[in-house]
Picture (cartoon, rainbow, N blue to C red):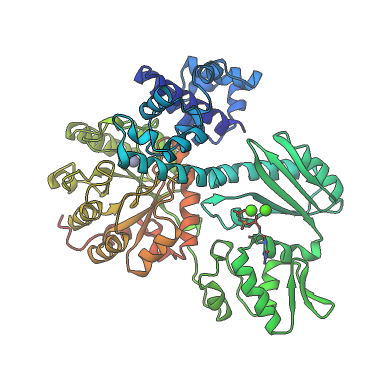
Length: 570
Ligand code: DGT
Ligand code: CA
Ligand code: CA
Ligand code: ZN
């Protein structure tokens, strides 16, 4: 699918227009289109062929034409144009946190900076710092941004990796005679970023499978192609390793190549201490193979319960598996509702009715509509008048929906001074309230969040660290204090399931649970497709060792209501 590829191009065009100081509305149109494409489950080329692009909300004629152009010719004139107009590789540099188009234009005009290398040089020799409006602090921020940028560009987001792997696996199943096939490596463990994609398969004719693998339509380069192993680069240099193994070794190989390395080393030592040998081929006593066909069998013969891939990180799971005391991790099918999403009342593409329909397709019992509050003007936050209108619409909608309950919520901003963006008279009328920081990232964040949690009507703190995996460090927040106050006040901390957030992350969500706080998972959907990111939220919860009791949106609606803060007076 070319969805994410085209989304990336639209974002690039928006970046370039911003660099040029173009009209804001043109910039917004491209950003919107990018977001829609990122969230789209259908293949954009299929929609284009059916002439249905313009039926997507937010995609107008001009954008649709550009998509079709790219699909049929492989290039987009507008993109080529803005690339020509922007010197060097400046466009890429706009991904660096704390480096805006204005600063970049300044660095270009005054110092001739055209690339990351140039930028690092003028930081090092102090020339950037000496420019008017720059200074030490700003340059330090840019330096940190560069570190983050370099780190993010070494690894792939889980959403991109999963999409490529799914497509590749479907392709192989269709064209090659394959018996078993599965992702392995960090992707199977659902890590938030992926170094390379590992796939494992069994089949009788390895050589033929590998030939078909190297003919995958998105292959850019074949790095290696043997009879049991092959590596290719796809889509902008993403490496995929395929290994073909014998059916009798499939479980052992899956175990080995799923990793993590640290987990594997523990396992191998356990095998050794009972006189066995564990390898990717199987479990052996002397020369005799005694297990290896299935993963479960491998763990069993070593005396362990089968450890779910998500927690194979040597963070205590081996000890518990030996005692058969592993946690019973929350499952995707346990989820009864989604506790964060936006509608057209603020900055989303989807109406409440559309979100409700999508939620029914996910089999949900409830969803919480959480549009932005009034001071978030860039996201069209709601003044009380519009919020009341929304509630009326929700009431009308609920009458028509026997199986789904649409809950009235809001994502209320925690303002710079620590106050909430709505008075309690409004908050108490909501079914559930999310509070979040979207402004004043350097302003007493810990204190502001803790204050918000003292409010009896605040049920959830959204994306508690504010990080964006690809581009932004979190706020300076003392998470431990936040978790303790969350536990004390009964406020739920969010795992934001959007793939570029995953916030809280696995480690923090586990710490929160251990300190007695409960977790809510919300997709933060800004269109109906956004609801699908729940899978990444659940994976993060599993990586955090959470059970269904720890995740409030596994509760029935009745239980959810009674699980709320005790000091909340109706
Ligand atoms: P990544 O690709 O950086 O996101 O992380 P992984 O975990 O996918 O690592 P990768 O692709 O290098 O290797 C896949 C798995 O193969 C890894 O999780 C465990 C296994 N593996 C790789 N090298 C070693 C090793 O030296 N010893 C052991 N025991 N296992 C290894
Ligand atoms: Ca890997
Ligand atoms: Ca690999
Ligand atoms: Zn938001």
